[in-house]
Each structure stands twice: as C-alpha cells, then as structure tokens.
Image (tube, rainbow over all chains, first blue to last red; front, side, top):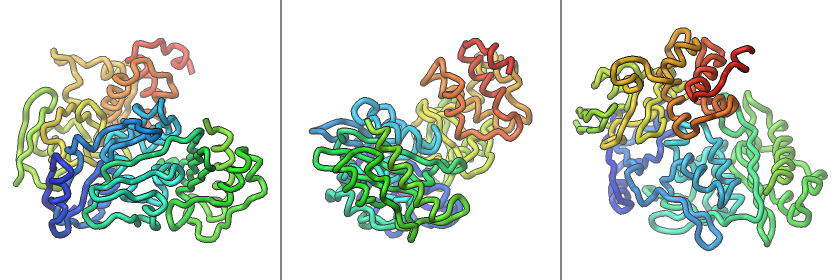
Length: 262
Length: 161
C-alpha cells in the first residue's frame, strides 16, 4: 500500500472540506477500499475517514420510511431494522461475515456500487432516496453501471431513506468463498406496484427486471413470472457461473423471493 | 508522523504511525503484541480478529488511526488476571479446538464476540458466526464443540458424533 495522509473529521462539514484536497478519497468501513489500496489499485493522496462522524450512524423510522445514516455498519442495521423492515435487516445480517458487518457501512456499499453487492438491490427495489451532503438522489438515478454512481467528486452519502414495503424479501445465491451474491434478488411490494431489483447478474450492475414487475403487480405470486425469461446477453460470465446460469438464477430467485415475501 | 492513542486490553497506549499503518501492524510491531496473527492479509481468514469498541473486526482491514481513542481487546487480554487460561481458551484446550494454532487467536476473539451477543448459541449459529474465520487443520468440528462448551451447554450429543 502506498502511503497517504489520514484525516478523521467528526462532522460532515469538516469531511466535505477535507475531501476538497487533491486526490482525496472518502473512507467508509474500508472493507473494500483497504484491500484495493493493498493491491495498489488506488493511490489517494489523502484518506478522509467517515467513521468518526457520529451524526451519520443511526437507524430510525419516519413517515413510513426506514432512514439509515450513511455511516451505519451492516450489523447495526441487522439489529435495529429487524422489527421495522425485516427483509432489509436480513440482507444486512448476511453480508460478508460478522467482522466485516461491524465495519462495512451502507453508504460505503452504495457509493462503491459493486455489481455483486447486496445493498444496491434493496435501494433500487425500494426506490430509496440517497441523501448526500448537497442533495437527494433517487435510486433509479443513482446507479449508473458497474462501480459507477451519480455521486460527484467529494460527495458523501449521509443518509439512505427506504420506503418500507408492504411485503419484501431478499434472495441471495451466495458465492461461498467471497460471500458476495452470485445473483441476488430484492422484491418489494408497494400499494402502487411491485419492484424487482437484481444484483450480481449484470455486467452493468444492479438493474430492475421490469417485465417481472409488471407481471407481479398484476398477480403477486411466483406463477405470474413462470412464462417470462431473462436474456443472458450482458450477464456476468466468470468461473463461478455462465451468463445463462445467472439469467436462470434471476428467474428462480425472483420466484423464491415472491413466495417468501412477508 | 501522526500519533495514535488507544486503550489495548485496558491499558492506555500510544505511538507514531503512518496513514497506511494497519491496526494489526500497530499491535504487533509497535506494541509487540504478536498474539494477533496476519493470515491472509486480505480480510478473508479472520486470524487477525480483535475487538474494537467491543465489536469483532479484522485488524488487517482497519487503519490504526481509525482506532484513535478506541477500546481494543486482543487475545493477550483473554487470559484470567492470574495468567490462567480464560473460559474460551480453556475450552479450546479441553476439546482440542486447534492443531497448528495459527487461526486460534482469531477464533477465540470471534467466539468471545459471539458469546457476548448470544450467550447460548446453537451449533448452526456458531458455524454461521465463524464464516469469517478460516481453519485449515481441524475441520471446525472441535472448534464448534469448544465454543458450545465455553457457553456452558451440554455437548455430549455432538461429542459422540
């Protein structure tokens, strides 16, 4: 790892200011960034740790939404959202392993937008609002392809607001070595329709399976998608699974998620 | 160089570190607490697991400067005050929960974090909790047995397997 300056501000304003330095990079829980630095795939001049910002660590419900501070570790979401939004709590409880969940944060996961990460599927399926130090971004506008987001240089995710669905479920087909989603499906049912978000499958990162959404909005049962199929074109193909295998998983897991949705 | 101060196993410590200094380097190289092991250095194996603020973390994937002011606990703090083995450590010895011993510091720290959250875990819960701790010798069976025994539960049923 190349060396860098390290700052640990205690407020969002201080962090935003610190990030204005040349080649400065925000550090969430570091569970992806630190291994990346070790491989010398990134070489920031300065790291600005967000871990000291107490105001970015919270889980609360407000007006039918679950609001999570951008710096909240997965383990805290798993505990504190268990009653208000159990599907999201269960997703958080199965990211990585316990030590990773104690460090990794929801803001960090969304800002990184790994194509196989769990959280982007929940944010997109719920139509979450991603709140930054300067604006609010809808999930539909936020995710812009593998590791790409709408975030500007130096912009920090301070809060994520998930509208709490009537019923939801996350099905993760786990790649057992990395514990990332080989394919993961988040299904969320709202009064105005059903949303289905897919992670781990597409080379462009998380996406909505709109055909299934239409079918499930008319009939919320696994039978409703029986006649649909997913185009393997553009799916990730690697040693863990072919594009066709992932396309198949999308349909199977969506059916399971619908059946298990509570 | 920047200075970092924290409490390690109840004692205040401080030292000069670089921005890139990992917590595990600070523990091992600055403080000489070599009980915490670096296995994979890629946050997969869990041999470096310590507690920061009472929560298990991988010290190879945590910066020392991010622990400024924190309470850190390592394997060196797990023994009883008189130097005898703590409950979890003793259970690992009694149930042969180790062979080469390289992963053991991380296993014990993860076990301690688990039993704090969940004092009477089931076998399945123990196995799930150890997902981030890799052992290449034991096949995990005796580690799981040791942790269940340390929780005060009857392990005669799984001991017979």
